[in-house]
Image (cartoon, rainbow, N blue to C red; front, side, top):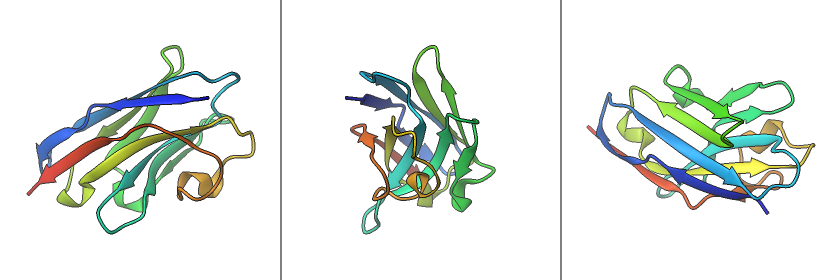
Length: 129
């Protein structure tokens, strides 16, 4: 059972930066897909950024391209999301997700409904204008 613990959320003004972290543990083999999802009031949780372990390929939601960077420290089993030039519309609860399923990929990174996922408890990001 994969356990994920996020940290690093907070409140910033527009244009500011935050760095989210997600510590992973409890998995038997290796994490194939890892990613960050965002949930805002009235909207379904959606993928923001992700990494596929097979080739290191990355996914970014169009709204965060050029501003957010996903990375991981495999030795420390930690996933990061560096968020720069934050906007009020980035406000929401951010969740870390992971899967050991070798078949994960593609839509796994975009939708909470696709594929198997383990979730963290989430960390709140609030951006004021």
